[in-house]
Length: 241
Image 1: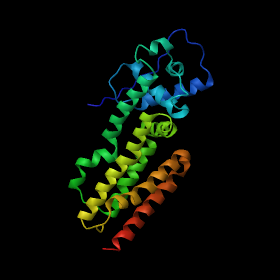
Image 2 (image 1 turned 90 degrees about the vertical axis):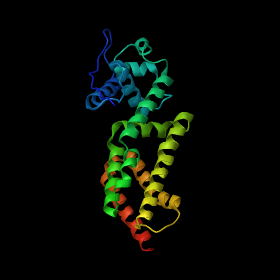
Image 3 (image 1 turned 90 degrees about the horizontal axis):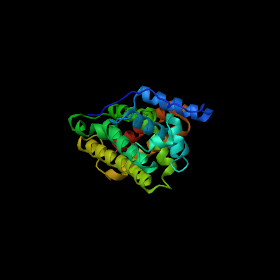
Image 4 (image 1 turned 135 degrees about the vertical axis):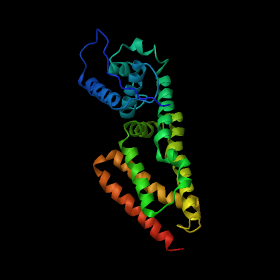
């Protein structure tokens, strides 16, 4: 069972006043812990370290973040951090493990695998599915931060490069190839190259999600564009039936 913990941020005795930057990071970490917390049954300090590391890695990058900065953001001494993690790489490995678990437990691309076969599809149902998934990707703070981290680090960190390929390409293609084949089987779409059709359907949406990461104020614009894109996709392909 996935457990979600909500812990207050604790500061060890003897800390000096925080700088403005440390205060901002600390406030963000505290907000994240209060709202949800990471899905891992660990001590509260370990969880705070993971939250702080994700916040810093996703804004500064992995290489530019030190264990001292992570400890400062949590409000503990650097030596205390090593009671929970062997190294900065160990923190990253743990983040990847627990956030991958969270993604698979909640993502449309994973959660619906067992239920799709029992459902029928319509254009409106597909639109609702896709728009809901876009909103999940944009507003789930953990998923959003991991996506930004992978974008920053994909050309420097082989482990994150592989993860980026897995999540941004292989999972997306696998899910949408299955979707296209279901729609063909149900007579909604004509038979054709499922891989090419899946790419035509999915990757404009991926590009719009990236755009919204850079310009979040354009969310309603891209949601509207995604709906129009899906309707046009079905209009073009169903005209061939």
